[in-house]
Image (cartoon, rainbow, N blue to C red):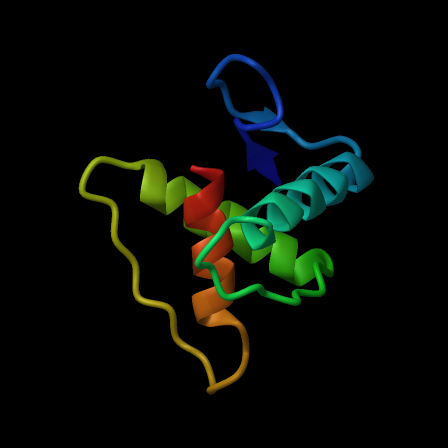
Length: 88
């Protein structure tokens, strides 16, 4: 996985330690849930969910970036997209 939000400069770097990435995302999820007028999300950030958040984040960062999330209902498409947009 490659992300640019773990360092201070917006340069994509390979994530060597996924525990640091998971900790960062859990912290951001906690901050998101603490905001007023926000429906709290109870997400389990397993490896595949973290990968999807990173992919969604990368697409959102692009100029005119858009994507079509396909999956069965209740699979977390909307919640993962919310967290990725909050990271941005």
